[in-house]
Length: 209
Image 1 (cartoon, helix red, strand yellow):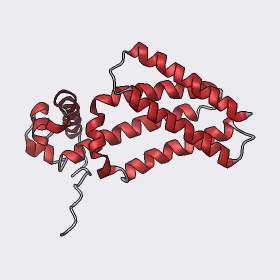
Image 2 (cartoon, rainbow, N blue to C red):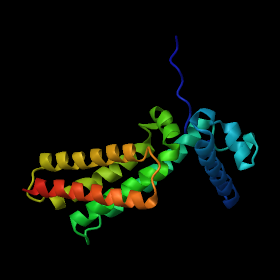
Image 3 (cartoon, rainbow, N blue to C red):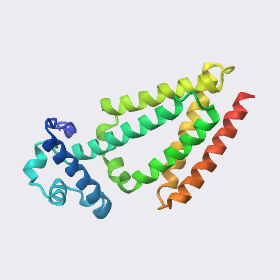
Image 4 (cartoon, rainbow, N blue to C red):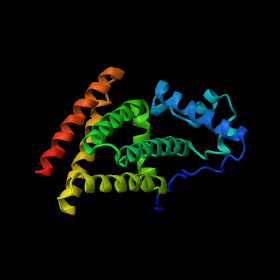
């Protein structure tokens, strides 16, 4: 039995003009609306095209299938989140503790904003987990985290810094995913993020000892 083919997830072509860019933006916005109002099970290219007010053929000019749309949504989220995290971790004008508090709140806020479409994105994750965009986003954060840990724990060896950084990131991801599964008010997210940040700062302080 031949192996199942992996769906194509790259764009068919890149938008070159403002009109084309506007069409792609409309398709992506419609995709988010379909996901949040109808759910992953009813997410189809036909529904996305209808919501965007374009012909399915126009959608297929840029996205060969629904997996490609989901990948683009996830890729955009990766890039935005990785840029935010890199900027926070790399801001050497601020104390490491302040950056870590900011990182916790920012990451939690991002997780809550993405929660509405996470199920569909998670369903498609096996298709793009090893895509270049995914690796680039992870590398951006990993590099910034490594530099941050060298600054925050100057006396520790590489193994200790790596372990501390891994604990911090795994905690952020695990807590963020669990917390965001229930709708939260902006005020609640900020309060929880600040508390999570204080906890991580306490852990970092202990690692200095």
